[in-house]
Image (cartoon, rainbow, N blue to C red; front, side):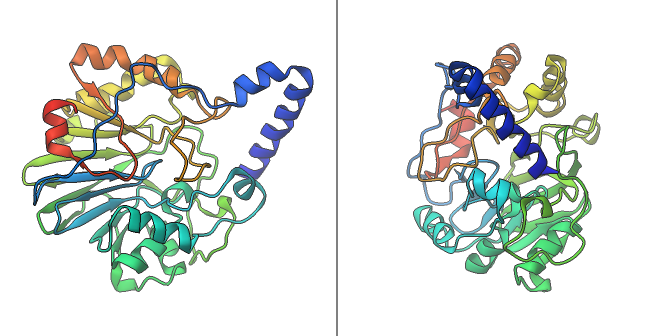
Amino acid sequence: MIRRWLVRILVALAVLVLAGGGYAAWRFGHPAMPADTQVLKPGTAAPGALTVQYFGATTLVFSDGRNAVMVDALLTRPDMRTVMFGKVASDPGKVDLALRRAALSRIDLLLVTHTHYDHVLDAAAVAQRTGATIVGSPSTRQVALGGNIPAARIVTVHGGERLSAGDFRVTVIRSLHSAGDRVPGDVTAPLRQPASAKDYKEGGTFAYLIEHKGFRILVHASANVVSGMYREHGVHADVVFLSTGGLTLQPPAFTQTYWRETVAATGAKLVVPIHWDDFLLPLDQPLVPLRRFLDDIPLTMSRIAPLAARDHVAVRYMPVFGPVDLVAAARTGR
């Protein structure tokens, strides 16, 4: 399904190039981010401080210097041609380079939000190198088994579970994938690499509430919600890492509902957009928004800006690799 969809895009692109190169360049290019985009500043945190590192898409690592919790794992970032026509697999060199650059040698928990390749491709490779226990759906278990991760280091969840690692406390929350899922279904057998991108089926979607010494972080990595999923369960957050990819495929009113259910409902005063960048480009290039034929991130942010202003919420982007003192960022917006 995903391959047919991408082939159609290429055919459309060829037609547009022949019919009008200017429009094709606009429609299939990377838009510029809004001029008022603000990025949190990386720096050296005090010993024991809670930091976060970002690797594009939805890949995040939270650490206090003793323990570390990772969300999703996409470090290889295969290009469009490979995703469309080939098979995807972890690139050991790229994984090792990213972990070294981020100074990550030990991860306790690797929380998988769902099993599309752009969330889970490098989960087994990272777990092999860092000793992480992989947490996720039954489909996540099959991906981990296919990557030769021992069953004892795989935790299968369904929603509502609580896990811990040092001072970190994690609550698993059942969620929904964004509308228009092009690779639905479950992974039902160990998934070995290389594999087609369409073999990485969604497998069920989770959000994660990560608490550290009373500070609460919500990672909501797919742009959809179950109505009342946070408000009705009394979930509060200081920071929300919020997926913004795919929102322009929905009516403008959906963004208002999405904001209300994820940000207003939790009382967060800092929102960090995730899943906004073109994950078909490597990490050694600066992050840029998704191409317009996939999404229009600046349009999404123009819809979010008045909601954030109304609710006095700071919207800040993450740098890549560099650690950010998360508690200080939530307090100052810098």
